Image 1: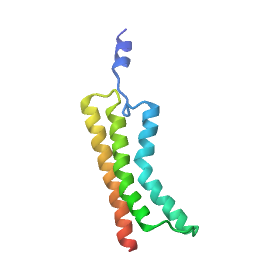
Image 2: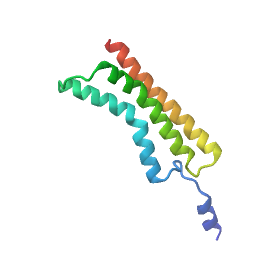
Image 3: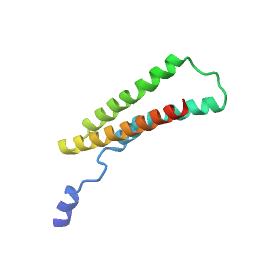
Image 4: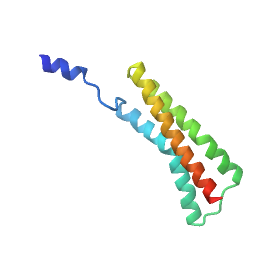
Length: 109
């Protein structure tokens, strides 16, 4: 009986359901995937899209991905402290991704 109560109170380190975790991962890595697709298109010498589209998507994808990740975390059944911590880690990870991409662009230019 005691072990059964203990198992019911355990929390996993990632307490998002699998579907939500999949959506979170897709949204979280979407800025990097977009950048890698741009690099692949350049390597294969596809005609480049207009610069305004590339720039708009570059600045549009990270905030939308952050909103999707935040919404996904906030709709989960974690505690408030867990939701805030998960959203903070998501924000730090997104800022790190965006900073790395910006640094690559500055060095390349």
